[in-house]
Amino acid sequence: MKIYTRTGDDGTTGMLFGGRLPKDAPRVMLNGAIDETQALIGLVRAVAGGGELAGVCTKLARDLWILMAEVATLSENRRKLKAGQTLVDPSMVEALERLIDDYSARFQMPRDFVVPGQTVISAHLDHARTVARRAERLSVAFSRETPGSQVQIYLNRLSDLLWALARWQDESILRFKEV
Image (cartoon, rainbow, N blue to C red; front, side):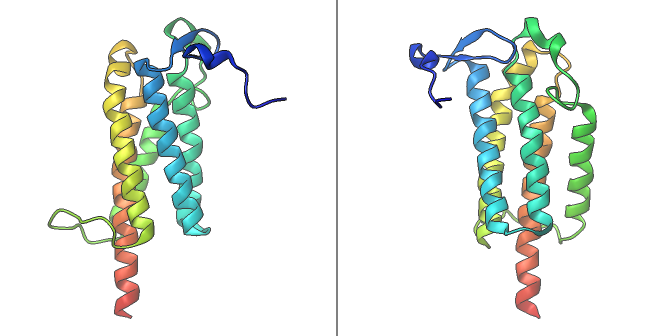
C-alpha cells in the first residue's frame, strides 16, 4: 500500500464516513490545528522520556484522535459517531478538569504573566497550549454548526491543562534547584 493516493491533488480531502471538503474549509483547518496540537504533545512526550507526564501526553494524544474523528465527520453522518470513540463525550471534558485540579494543586499559582522557557519541557507545553488555543478559536464556527458538540469545550480545557502542566514542570525544576 502506498502512502499517497492522489485523491487530494484536486485540493480536497476525504471525510470520515464519506464526502470531501476543500482543504481550506474551516472544518479541515480546525482538524489541522488539532493534529498540530497532537504532534506537539508527542514532542513533549518524547522529551519527557517516560514517566507521569509521558503517560498524560499519551492519553491526550488518544483523545485528540477522537476530536479529529468528530470534526472530520459531515453533519449528515454524525449519527454514525460513537461517544468516547469518534465523538467527544462530556466525561472526557470532566477527566481534563480533574487533571487540571490535580496538577494545579502541585504548584504555587504565578502572580504575574509567565515568561515561557523555564524548562525545555514547559516551553514545549506552552507551545502546544498556544496551538490548542488556535484550534479552540477555529472550533467556534464548528460548534455553531454542530449544537451539543463538546469539541470547543474540550479544547478550552486542554489548553488550561497544558498551561497547568507547564507550570508544574517549572515548579518541579525550581524545587530541584533549591535542594
